[in-house]
Image 1 (cartoon, rainbow, N blue to C red):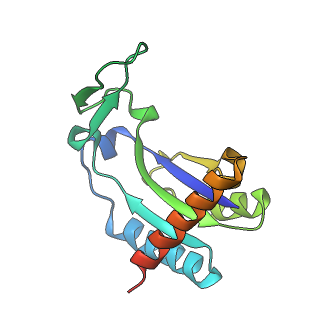
Image 2 (image 1 turned 60 degrees about the vertical axis):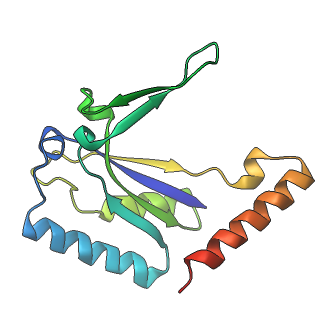
Length: 144
């Protein structure tokens, strides 16, 4: 099962305040533990929403609207993520609880969400096979 740990933004992260040296070291140690356990798939911090772009789609079709950041609702903005593959929901929770406070000072908030597997979304065998081939090609591209 794959889970995404979504790190929510704070006023500091939106202001572009960089993490402390101690927090960076704690996150590196945590990521090393994830790697040693063989569960880490990806992990990155995101720049503030002032660097972001939002694309919204109108209800009745038509041309999508492009809006430059910043975006105002900081608690709804994502500041980073960690993608893990684990055996159970409980294991995902255990890993999430071990993550250092991503912003320090007790401001961090993590949302843990299961990732849809392709089989959860498709019941057409032909489409499922095409998606499987596409994902295998993608994996082949990411290997050195």
